[in-house]
Length: 584
DNA sequence: GCCGTTTTCGGCCCGACTGTTTTCAGTCG
Image (tube, rainbow, N blue to C red; front, side, top):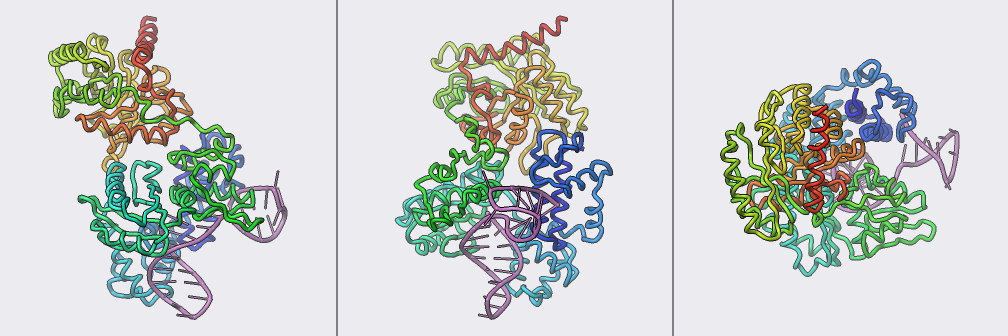
C-alpha cells in the first residue's frame, strides 16, 4: 500500500468524523496525520515500526494505519461509512455549508445528498431549523446552482490574466498606497480558486466602494471594513476576488498572512508562540511587552521570527520551515537563468511560425539556443514529418544558423513513443540529431504496467535525451495516464534521461510534487521547456519556472540553464554511456 | 487524537464576516 492511499484513507476518516460531530481537534489531528503520511519519504507500509517517529502520529493514528495496512480497511471508517450517507461529504463543497450545518441538515431533515438538499431548500423547509433562516436557505440554493454550473478552479495563466486586469484598474486610485497579489496565485499554484489582493490604504471604506463598482464586478459576496469579496468577469473568465484592506504599517504582515498557505501560516504561528509572540494579519504581538510589531517588508517579518525570507512558492509546509530554521533554504531557479528552450514546433508540423521567427523571438528573449522539435511521422493529426521532410528542415536550420548571430538552433524532434514502445524513427536518423525528445500522444488508456514499460523502453534507447510531458495530464481536463512514477524515475536515473517540466499552463507536467520527489529521491535533471506552437507561447516559460520553484529546483537541477557547450557535453554523456553498455 | 523550554492535563493559530441572534455560532481563509 502506497503512502498516498494511506493518506487518502485518513483524510476520508477526518471528513466523516467531522460530519458526525466529532471534536474538531481530533478531526484536525487526523488531517495533520494524513498530511504527514503523504509527505513521508519512506514507504510507511513497509516500516510500520517507525510510525510514531512521525510528527502528529501517536498511538491512536499508528493503530489505525497498522489496521489499514494489515486488513486493507479501517473498522472505524467502515462503520462511519455504513451509518453516514455517501452523499454527505460532497455537501461540504458548497460555500457557506460546513460540517455543523451538514450534520444538522442530516439529523433534523434527513438530508442525505445534494438533490435532497435542493428539494428541501425549494420547499422552504430549511429556514425553520435552529441557526438557519430565509437568507441561508437562499444561499444554499445559489451555492448548488454555482457548483453545478461554474468551474471550481481556473488555470494559473487565466487567473494571472484576470488579476493583472484588476491591478490595472485599481493601481492609480488615490486610496491605493501599496498593492500586491497574495494567496495561491502569488504562490503560483497550477490552478486557482480565488484571486487575493492585499492593499495598503488609509481610507478602506471609500476604496471598498470603488472596488465593488468596478465594471468587471458581477456580484458582491461580502463587504466589510477590511475585506471586500466579489465575483468578477474579465473577458469571459469568471472568478472570485478578495481584497484585503489594511493600513500601510500592517501591509507586510497582511501580505504574508494572505499569501498562506494555511498550513504554512499554522507553522509560523506555532513557532511564534514558542517565542511568546502572537502572529496575526496585523502584525506580531508581544504579550510580555504588550507591543505589536509591524514591518517594512516580508523580510523584516520573517526576521522577527529569526527566519530567513521564504519564497512564496515554497510556503506549503513541505519542509520549508525546517530548512528555514537551519538557514538552509534552496537557491531557487530564476527566469533569467534559463538560457534556451528545447521543445517547440514550427510550420513544418503544427506550429504557427517559421523556424527563423521562432529563433528571432528566442533571441529577443535573451536565449543562447533553441531546439526545433517538430512532431514525428506517426502523429498525422499534427502533421508529423517524414524522414524526407526532416532532411529539408535540417537544411533550412543550417541555412538560418549560418545567417543568424547570437543564437544557435539545434536539430531536434518530438518523437512519438508508439503503443508497443517502439520509436517513430530509426536509430540512424536519431544519431544525427542534436536533441531527441520522446513522448506519448496516443493510446492513453493503456494499463499502468504497459504504459510504464512503454516509457522505460523509450528511455533505454541511447539517442533519446528527454521524455516530454511525462504524465500526459491536461489540467482540469484529462487525468495523468497511469504510470509507476518510481520506476520511471529509477529508469531515468539509470539511463541518464532528462525529464521535462512542460511549461504549457494546461500541462505543467511534471507537476511540482513529482519534481520535488524526483529531485530529492532520485537526483534527476530536468529541462524546463515551453512546447511553444507560436512565438508568443515562448513566454509560457514563466509558468514552468514558477512550477520548478514550487518543486524546489535550483539552477543546477535544470539542463537548460547550462551554456551551449556544457549542454552539448551533457547530452553526449547518455549516448556515450549507453552505447558502451550496448556494446557489452 | 497529539503533545510538552509554563510537560502527563489542558490546551491545540487567528480574526473577519454573515446571518442568526440580542451575544454568538458557523464558516472561511
